[in-house]
Length: 82
Image (cartoon, rainbow, N blue to C red; front, top):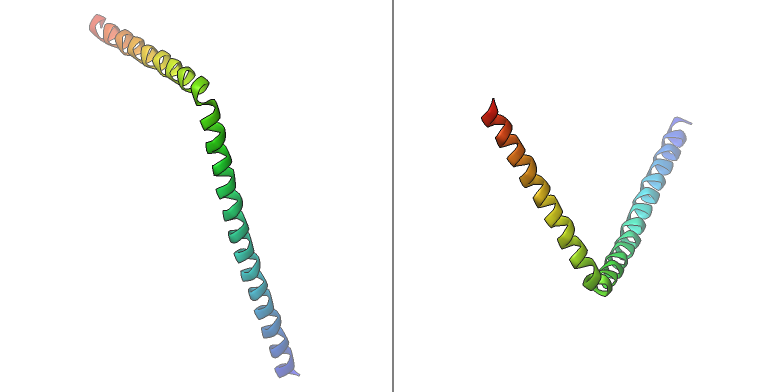
C-alpha cells in the first residue's frame, strides 16, 4: 500500500510540475507576443501624433527648467540673507 501511495503522490506531483511548466511556457510565449504587438502599436501611435506631441513636451520641459531655476535662485537668495 505504501508503495502505491508513494507512486501516486510522485505521479501527481510530476503532473502538477509539468502542468505548471506548460502554463508558464504558454504565458511567456503569448505574453511576449502581446507585449511586442503593444509596443509596435504604441510606436505607430506616437509616430502619428509626434508633430503635436513634441511641442507640448518641449513647452513642459521649458516650464520645468524655469521653475527649477526660480527655486534655485530663491534658495541662493535665502542662503545669502541668512
